[in-house]
Image (cartoon, rainbow, N blue to C red; front, side):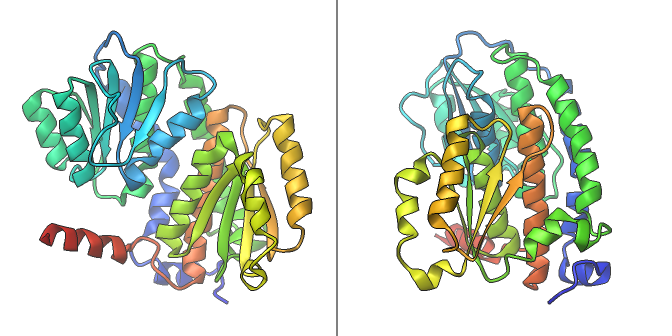
Length: 352
């Protein structure tokens, strides 16, 4: 097996230098905050719903908003992943059109429909057609640095929306939580970067369990977006299959599935994302579920969040998942950055 303590080997596999992006993530978080704070947000009135429209790495920020703000925000938050928009998007909707490249065709289509319906639109992009449309139409756009794989720009894509909601008075100011998260990310990087040896590196140790496995990611409902982030990072970085399922829903269906497919389930690894904010009934469900599925999967591994605020705890797990998927890619001998099937799909769509 590949030695994850050998930096030379890591760099040979990591041909596009995903490692540097991971190391720079705390700095990205800081810069994203500064970009958003320098932006002059419109003082909108009569906002009755929030919509985030985007795909892939540009949409996950919307899912995180839904999870993070579920107990605080008084109006619905909806994530749209399509060319069209739901019928409820109207002039009282605050719509974030999020496309890292600025050329995501579904997002551009949804943006144009939002403009037609006179929704209150703010774009988050690094450029492309979306930026051009905003400039020609006088639509506010938050411009973030370009040149990264969209999934690695989660700080740039998420924080401007969070700060925008605070600036418009829809949520409380999050400066303290944002700063705590930044400090925590700096500390966590020390334990998960390549110079930290396998014997004391949580990300390396977890990745070692996963080559050739089908990965199921379980977590409480307030971590549902974090579970989804783990799944998408394993897909794109590690070129592996993973599926996120949340408590308590999985207790009403998936738990029964462990009774069948004996040969397959021995190739499954279950990772349960844990958090001190879990309600007592969810804690009980997790413990009972572990006893019910027993040793049917190859292993059940629990991973706990770190930090005080919910924002810090969520991003501690996100950052860990990014490192785990990176190390898993190295172990499987693939470049974490390259996403050939997606590139091929876009090429063929452009020809239609």
